[in-house]
Length: 101
Image 1 (cartoon, rainbow, N blue to C red):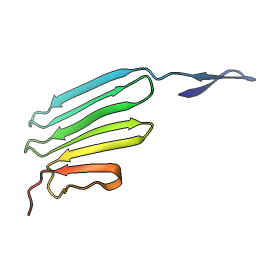
Image 2: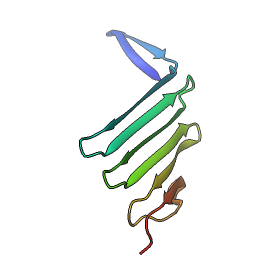
Image 3: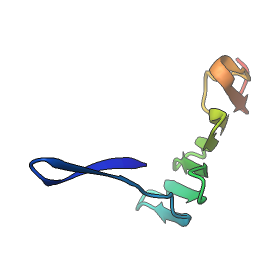
Image 4: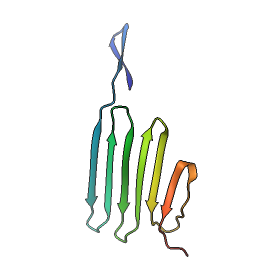
């Protein structure tokens, strides 16, 4: 990340900060039994890898796993949401376990 910091009216200092590795995550369940989760990690090159998702009280779920790096953002979505089908639009893979009608 490059940031401009104005020190005085006539001085501009360019500071380039190196990405710092990190990791975080959480998961919780509400009073009806629905769950939500997220986890992500980043490295010292600015690459990110993570996932997020939910499952409702009826068992309908969506889980997204992603990578964001020099090759762009790529995601795989796993779900059993009604009306979804397996597809791969715009570099997003969709894995559906929805019942066929």
